[in-house]
Image (cartoon, rainbow, N blue to C red; front, side, top):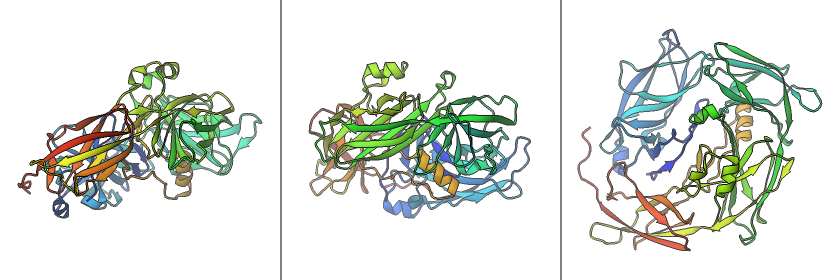
Amino acid sequence: MQTRSIILLLTLICIGTTTLAGSLCGQTEKNSADSRTDDAVDKVEMLTFKVLVVDPHGAPVEDAEIAVWGMHAKVEDSTLYRWQPNDVGQQTRLKSDSQGLIEMQYPRFVAKDVETGAICMCISHPGFVFFNGAVSVEGDPPSVQLETGFRVALNAIDGETGEPIINDLYGVINNDHRAELWKNHGNGTLVSPAYVKDSSLLRVVKITPGQPMMFSELINIDPEEKSRVLLKDVKLFPGTRVEGKIDESVPRPVKNGRVAIYVEHTNEEFRDYPLKSWTWSDCGAIEEDGSFAFDTLPRGEVLQVAATCDGWVSQPPTVDSVREFFPEEPARVGSSSGQGQLVGLQKEVVRPVLPMNPSTTLRVLVVDEDENPLPDAIVEMSPNTNWFPSGSILLGTASYSKPQALVAGRRGEAINWPRSENPFTATTDSGGIAIVRNLPSDCNQVLVVSHEKHEMQVDRGEFLHVQLQIAEQNEYTVPMRKRADKEPDR
């Protein structure tokens, strides 16, 4: 059985009917099989419910496509349970019938003794705004109303030469990446899918593989009651190249180096609405000499950079640099989750040098109720890198490449999502010892231990927090107790 993950993520990103596993702001994420034994997973009880998809007038919508990505418990809390195909079965893409109905199955329990209360899903249809949210399993049947929204039609020109740009154009509104739904009519006119009639941020990008990208300035769109927004001769300009390296404190050759970058632009009125921010992300390898590079990023923005390699993690930014770029955020520096270094993208080329800190190792001793060593327990931690002003990634797993996702979507190819395995996982040996490596030090982290026959001595919804000191190795003992023999009534 796959181990559970407790990962604090701040932004859910849905791509058409594909989702990047994550959670809404402030939620805690777990696997749907959390607290089940292997035998229990084999006996998952599935229930059936229907969802009614309607238009703004209440008429049924046919051929709306649904993709399920998570669940919530019936008991009110903030936990998000990911839909795990290995645990509860693969949820195929389903379409609504002529009556607007979609029938699907879901597990009765998201965890032991915890009933499912809502299904998190994406619903897409070319004539309506993309829906992403939680739908209660109660109702006769529960309904989802799709909005008609507005569309953008535009053409673009080279901002330096004035020449029209016909091919390889992509529109990015807020943090949406659904390039396959933007239609190029062959004459350079690009038309968007439907979006909610609300203020949005748009940037037009030219992505030709093998060439530096070009970006437009950010365009603030306020459609009001319009069904279409027309943008003529949007100017695109070269961006900023990044040629960086990690500092010389890290011995060369650098091993297993990864770097993740993130750009987020949020208008002041959108500060509390991260899904209305314009975002750009990418990732790559750190060479053995400590260098890394990104060909083009939107000039004038603030770049956030986080790096990891064997034995080292990048330092968080200084309070002064946060005040310079994000004056409302300095209190977040030094929290339990780190932040990336900040770099202004004002020049044609920037060459940041990332200061690094030695990572730490956590030696965990897991014992049973009689204080005997407990072998085969799975120990897991989930240190995050938090971005300003919102969003996060699991440290060391990098992010994903938005330009690659856009190109793949346009071509109808599979998107190369980052690996989902948690590198901060270890299994206890015969002496009850597990070693978790490459953790950030001087911070507070959540520790989770799971076992087939034992459970942690914490109440549901509570977590074990470990303060990692600045040291080559930290040590911690986790007492366990036997699982209750009673299985939930089914």
